[in-house]
Amino acid sequence: MLSSIPAILISVIVLSIIVIIHEFGHFIVAKRSGILVEEFAVGMGPVLFSRQMGETVYSLRAFPIGGFCRMLGEEDTEKTSERSFGSKGVWARIAVIAAGPFMNFVLAMVLIICIVSTTIVVKPEVVELSAGYPAEAAGMQPGDVIKKINEKNVYIYDDVQMIMAENTGEPVKVEVLRNGRTMEFTITPKLDENGSGRYLMGFTPLIKSGMFLQEENRNGYEKAGLWDTITYSFDTMVFYVRYTAMGLAKVFTFHASKEEISGPIGIFQIVGDSYEAGIEHSIGAAVQNILYIGAVLSANLGVLNLFPIPAMDGGRLVFLFLEAIRRKPVNPEMEGRVHFAGFVFLMAFMVFIMYNDITKIFIG
Image (tube, rainbow, N blue to C red; front, side):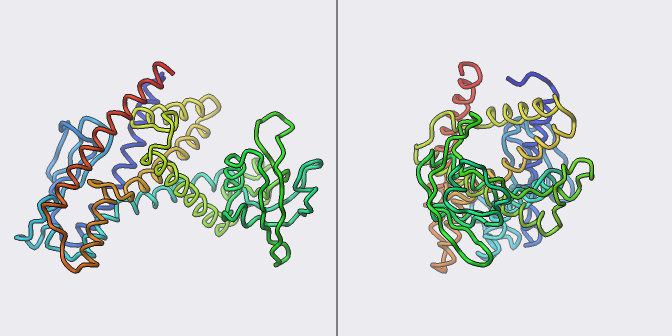
């Protein structure tokens, strides 16, 4: 349960920033394309506050679960005005719609860089082998860089951990790079002797300290450079995006359990819990936790909006790409009906998710 006003406020702030960044992507590209933006809204539902600035109304609405950037002619493809959304070329409209998810990925990348710069970089390179574990028995050596496990590409150590968690102890084929040569090993992970419940190959990965960590906090690790930080942050964002897409695919194909699904209420719970868990140690730890959750949520929103779901950015992009291929628009009435059906489905799905969130909180 959210147990403090600061946790609730931080949850609202985090979600609002993610929404603002998303809508700002649509807003700025629309403006650059000469489209009239009629309203830029944060939140949904009744208007709490609004102000006209130039040609755009900026509003704050009651429910912090989304937002929108309303453009002239966006819904009815009005072309009577040269400043309407529908009057612009198809590639300009594609750019406007895609800009929202793109900005979420930019925000996720920036937050991850902040985290990595002040924590550690963990790479899938063998520094030391654990005695009695299968990596040593198979012939892996310090300096080996893991490139693939079961034909899945490995970029960061999180990839290794995720694949091991999914594998549950079955033999895996590990491809490593050693002195410029590619080598393969078949390894059967072993249950952690320390009782963590994880299956391990048995090696210590390469760890570097964040480039902004003070000397006394580096624990003897080499400092990561700027390039290490940027590439590791990008690979981490791709990791979030990849597993978010896989998770959403499970949700929309009805293969996810209710414990794996969270909506706005569940997200508030996660953000609040992360803040409170961090603040028990220090303000810095709380900030790190919030940055991490913010990065994951921003990547989630970017991926969700690119799914080809009617009424969302991805669904609209499908119709725009069809228009680009056919060189003529899809029938506006048919497209409108499809988006309306998608909107009804999303609203029903949102009700289900909110009910699921409430039962998880109050019933368990």
